[in-house]
Image (cartoon, rainbow, N blue to C red; front, side, top):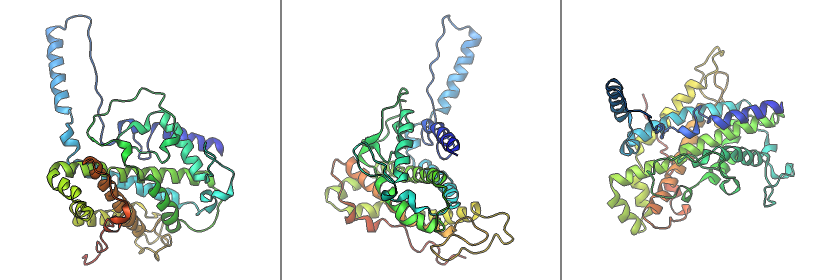
Length: 348
């Protein structure tokens, strides 16, 4: 059994939770190549080189394209499948409270602070990933950055498109707290099935997917800032954080996100062997009945109550740093960041 756990960990070293290299992440999928020749090229090879250069110029992705809201939103949409499938994998195991309890083991970090089994496994996983430069990617944020070793591979040269220091905004502490205290209770059947190793690997995949999706809010904020930097600067200088949140918010887009998350969860989460795969979701707070691996509305609720508000929290903090102003404490504005509650009203 231990062999299978470490094989899974080895796979995550070279592949992210959505099956792509974290060194060639969703918003930075290009490489630079240098060509050299010891002898002057012939006329035919020159023509080929010119043709290749023309093709390379056409294939180049400009920063303005990366930071367009359409480009960023397409990346966010792709993250939905990653999150849904990660939740489906976790739902196959019982709740297994023991892996979240600090008192059920004698695990400690390097400073002697007690750790749950999830925290210990997450730290050890991040240490491995850090050595192969996962957290040098602009999209990746560690849950325990202060405990990680430097990369053993040469750091890649990512384009500098966000002027704010990457480490200035990191809400993974809130992501972890919400996941353990709110999501697991609704996602999983109570009890213990003794599959603690497999369970914690699923937890890590879910947490990493949530973290990436939420921290992409920095790119959203930069895109919106470039569209109207004057208004954002004015609101921030006035200390009008409510105005900043209001300007960041597009409720119709958020309603569509919730509806799409529900439809995807309803589709991907169907139990195909069920005799009635269209059975409505079960009572709130319990996994779905026969026909669904997870409750579809749970995914929509996670987006409304966790992903959307924390993404907006990241955007607010980023914009304050962008303007050189210390961000206010989240308790002053977090209640304004929640997703819309009327996304499923008046639908035909």
